[in-house]
Image 1: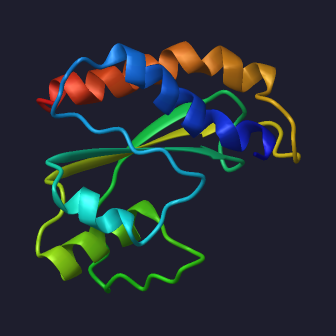
Image 2 (image 1 turned 30 degrees about the vertical axis):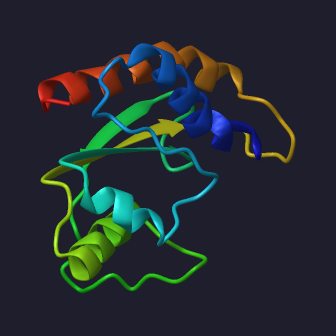
Length: 139
């Protein structure tokens, strides 16, 4: 992993213990893959988690994710949450009715590094926001 880029996997592992709903599926991967569109097509709600340098370290941003009306435009190397939503809709004729991207601002993306202090401090808030999304949306 590349430092703070590992926060999504860390949060997913923490959610395994926090979510007791048998209908909720947690999918962990190092990157978003076209093959995940099939799982996505069976979901009524999707919550994507990522780290980013585009917001201040430790800041948490939640934004809705919509399918891209221009088409999937997916390659095997670059897939985004909107691209996955579009791919699910195009290939399986259905995508989640609601989807969100939870982004945590990262401070360090060095190879082999652990989570930075700002990201570690943001973890409880990110978990709370994710659980709120799941409960508010009926997951």
